[in-house]
Image (cartoon, rainbow, N blue to C red; front, side, top):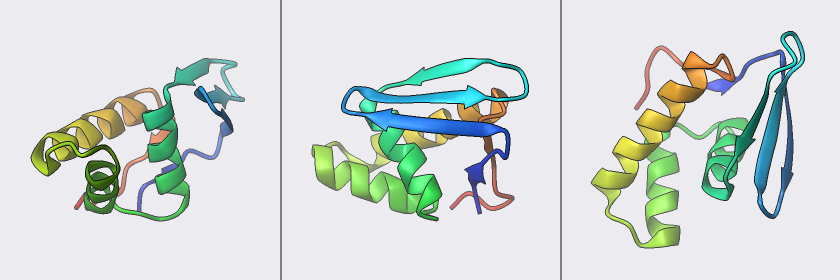
Amino acid sequence: MTKLASQIRKVSGPDGAVALDVRSGTMFRINPVGSQILDFIEDGLNPAQMAEQLSATYGAPLDVVSEDVQEFLRRLAACAVIDLAKENS
């Protein structure tokens, strides 16, 4: 299961979220859709479920949303904001 990294603290608001890496002091500004994805991670959703919900909410094609979710998760993992699950389906 994908989860927030243990050193990350997140605060959400109407304009998105801010994630703080308490080890390095690095802060990440995250837009409202990205904030929703972080919430989905905390709720235990897998990437396919995240894409389905976002596609339904915003009326965007599921294949496009799926690719965008995967790319966003890869970027979060590269910045050590999340720990990616072994199986991302």
